[in-house]
Image (tube, rainbow, N blue to C red; front, side, top):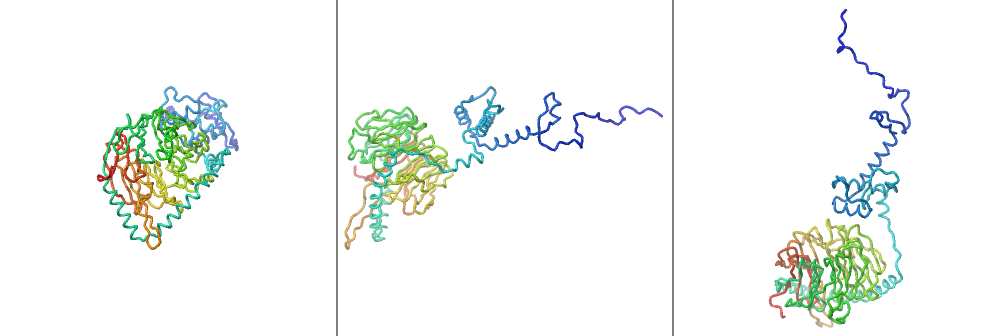
Length: 513
């Protein structure tokens, strides 16, 4: 019988001493995995591998920013190297995630963690539960006194407003229709009256003085230019900010009864400071410090005693202008706060942020009374109607929404522009109409609150009627994005500022100058 060629012999594997017999299968989780020792390393425990997989699963659930600049900023806050040798954006993001995970679990790399964790916006179920919990921050006695004072200030004003609305409700409908038609006809005749360079860079905001004779225009160069109305002549230049001017507000009595040497104007800058300005010198007379990031908007309380500021540090703050002290640091937004607006009574304030959420706060109690949840992009502007119960919001989603605080819901959505809506302002000024006596009844019809104006990144300024939220007039003259808009209190002019570095004045051609 011939021998079998070796290639045809059956191959039988040698018994591996590391293999497990069926009778010796471990029934616990903490056993050595033999295959890990073949590469010359010590065998790993199964529990360690499972624990590592669970850690990676939890770390993957943590939300980190996708923008590399924000990732670097967060690493800097955690006092970690912003970049490692050979590290790309994706690797840096993973390192941040690991850092945040270890922070969340209460461990650190020094305590034996191999990886680094994530960014400031960790979103584990436990963290979300903590963020959703309502919490209160103790306030100073001065805040309590301010709340009491604002309650006493706002209640008589609210009573007067309601009485006036009842009086207007008694005016015959035909007179109302005739009055509103006359307003729309006058607005439809608006056109550009003048234009003036107001900054070396984009002019981010422009606001009329209470007497409607001066325009204050803040620019990205950090300066504020004062222009006369209607000739747009140069009336002064205020310098003090080292970064872009975002917020600008006139004291309610400035240029009317307030002394020119007092704080007539407040402005907020990109460096985080709020400056108070007089009309007699070109340097600030006081500075309010506290925000840790850019101040996007400032707004005076109707009384003129207080100032609100919105900032990119995710807070808005309330300041006492008499003592020049911070009264309130209000949280409530998950991202940068971009706009604030006081109700005409002085009882409520609305805030809007880049988180696409707006909130209405009761200044007398400190509570949120309504959440403005409906925009899909950042909220860029807020304005209260003089009727006291409606607030409009502008957004990057190209829409303007109308909110009713009595009904606690959105009552209208307006497609205002073809792009981002940068600002929104109601006409809110002195009475403009007729005071007649017929049959013993007073007919008081006012123009304030009958229209509002918006500016947009499509280069247009639009005027909308509050009767049916219809577009009354489209104004176009800017060569770039329009960044702000305002209406004079005498109901004669509209001003807009833009990225083309100009302020433009709008009015009817037949206006008496």
